[in-house]
View 1 (cartoon, rainbow, N blue to C red):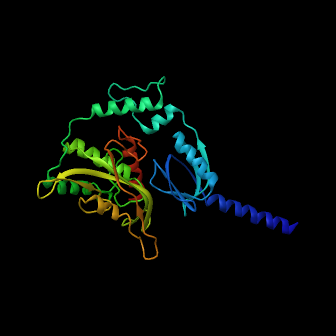
View 2 (view 1 turned 45 degrees about the vertical axis):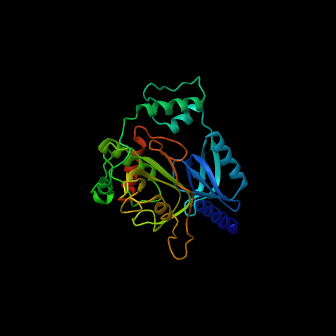
View 3 (view 1 turned 90 degrees about the vertical axis):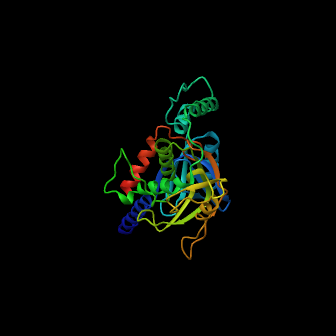
Length: 309
């Protein structure tokens, strides 16, 4: 009897330790990359890449991607390996709210009698019609000053976190890039009256992290930054990436992508970025979600300021 009690105690302790070793979150998967032996799911609401090997998990994620559903994932927070996954079905309205937080744009109103695709198309047209006329090309002399202004908004320069006027956590590379880029887009629009695009890249991304939050080696699944047009020394129009989380000045697309393909340490596997691609500036994440009233942007920036500074 004594041996049985001891064995039961060990089992219960093991169950408790195992329960503490996993975490559960809700994600919006939109793409699966990798081979059969090492699969990675990319989600729209986080840049953190979750890994899995089970065909059962793959089937659930593939179905969720097809149906634009969200899923609940239970995973090991140390390795980001998915242990269990459960689909959380969204109806058309819920899915639309996820992709477009602000439903009243111009003359647009969500029509329950229409399909999701029709509502999405009408929303996009209405949103574009409300965009003010912005200058497409930034004069070369202003690129550096704009970049330095963005740098001045870094959370390393503030004493406290302000929910109404959040700083930008450039040093927390693993997540929040969508909020950083969207805030810079807002500033370019409202302060400088310049247009921009968003540049995305997906894949096995790596970078050395300079901040105290997120670890020294950052591994993530997708990244986004601001992409602008300017003129080179000969007067030819060129595009540059503005990303203070990785560079001290505006850079080319090639340099930006290469910076995410480095090895974080001598024993780490190097990154493998895919081909960068452009989307309109109002696009928030790779799966097309938006943050038209900037509520998600402000909340994310505030959260990471409090977490890392």
